[in-house]
Image (cartoon, rainbow, N blue to C red):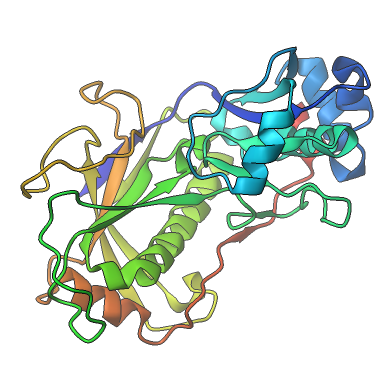
Length: 326
C-alpha cells in the first residue's frame, strides 16, 4: 500500500535569536556579514525574498519546558529577539533552511545571543569554539529532537530490565521532520526500559525516510505529492554501525485521535495541522505484519547487532547558491 504525502507550495522555517541588546543593524548584518560557505547563498536568498530577518524589541517568550537552568537564566536576561525565517518550495530543501540557520548562527555569535529552534524545542550551540553551520547536511546536526512520554494512567509494573514484555507505556515522537515536508514519526507501546532502543530505531527510520524524500524532491521539483510505501526496508547501509536488515511498517496516525486502546489520558504531541484536515501529520512505526512477537521483541531484534548510539544521514547538499538561485 502507498501512503500519499501532500507537498505544499512553500515551506517556512523559523529560528529565534534572543539577546540582551543588538549593537548593530540586523537587516544589514544579514546577509552581508554572514560569512563562511553560506554567505553567497544568503545574499541570493535575501535578494529573492526567501530569507527574512525581523527584529523585535521585546523578550521572546518560550512555550517549552526543556531548556536547561543555564539557558533559562540567559533567556531571562534578554530584552529583545530576532526571527530569521526561510520560505522556499520543498525542492529547495535542505539548503534553504541551512542558509537560514547559518544566518541565525552568525547573529547569535555577534550579539552573544541564544539561538533557539522552536520546532525542535531546543537550543543550538554558537560559542566561539563551536563549528559553524556544516556544509553537508546531516540530520543529527540538531535538526531533530524527540518527545518522550509515558501514558498517564498506564499500568506500569516496577521497572525490571530483565522483563521487557511487562510494560508498554512508552511513546516516542519525533520533532523536526515536518520542516522537510514529511510527517513526524512515532513509536508507541514499548517498555520504559526500551527508551534508548526506541529512539535509536526512530532515528534510523527518520534518516531513511528523509534520504529518500530529499532524493525524490530533487528529481521531481514540480511534484505536489510524494507516495511512499507503507513497508520500509532498512538495510545495513541505512544503519551507521551496520546490522541486520529488518522491515518497518508505517501507518498514518492522526495525532489528535484516541485510538491507542488504553484507558486514561495520554499527553499528546501536537504535530499539526489540525486533525480532520486530510493531512497526514504523523506516521506510526511498528513491526511488519508477519512479525509474531511483541513490539518489545521487535525492538530487541532490530537493535541486537548495533551499538548503543546511532547517527543519522549524511546528505551531500549541492552548492547552496546554485540551489537557491534555481
